Length: 413
Image (cartoon, rainbow, N blue to C red):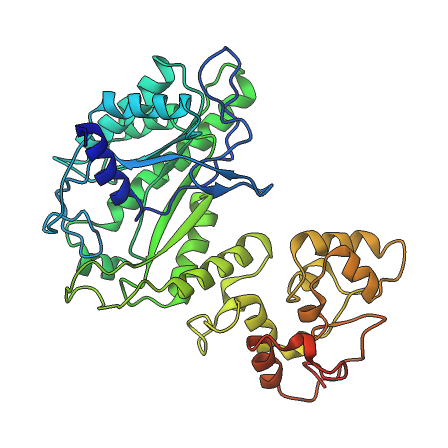
């Protein structure tokens, strides 16, 4: 095995724990016969809005690290094989992989070696070399190292499409327990700086056409689920605040992968993947379905129900809000019906101006009637009554028996 291939094997495997990569959302078009193009495309085994799968060279610059975070496979005290690329090696790999049509861009993270600025400077040099020397117009996503200087973060924003400052642990108290060498200030400060700089560049662009792009695909972050005792409510409140205050494009959630027995982290037999999935579903409700955290979870239900998705959970906990009249109720309420997505809700609103909708219309629109029928009223469906318990519906949906449910049985009658 060649030296480069050995490094690639070690550092690509270590990079799999960083989930904060996505389709780009960037518009870095190739207008001067350069190499690559990220206009309308994405990265790394992710899916774009049109369902297309895209790829990325996803590696760590190095897995050497000065920190000893209990949740991290690259922590200082973990007995793993170490490796480090040079700037030239990462650039050559990216160019060669792109020429062979293996990738559409680069996702580059790193362990922290020596200090934050020393590490960040090398990540920036990779992006700068690709852009200025090779005229590379493909997608570049860099890890923004907490504690790095504003000057390096600014340069990173000019040469990359997206930066991610990973929070990892959802509270300061838990961070101090599992990663005492880190603090929230070093994480939030670069987020604030990048958010402010992006706003400034957007404003400058309105007045000066020559203003360069700055983080065209914005910022993202990652939260680890299950490495600390925070509830789903705490995790979602933090994510919601990051979307609103930092204007993050995405918050990614990664189920904690048990590394070894350590009293600072829980002893799990496997990553909590189902919980991770439920949190992603709740995040989707926050971003696209106009839900608030308080609607998804409350004091009596601080954690998501693992048996059913959060939207169905909301409907089952709030029978007083259903059934929803498809022909009368507003868009926000229609969005809260299980089995009705954003596109279907918009079609319902526009279609009912022309005619009174019935169940056949809803089926053609794309509504999942085997779920939605128990939470809506419209011609073609039995009338709903609000005088019975919800548990039968929940158990039948869990068991996948809704298709065989008698037509007269509903959530409300």
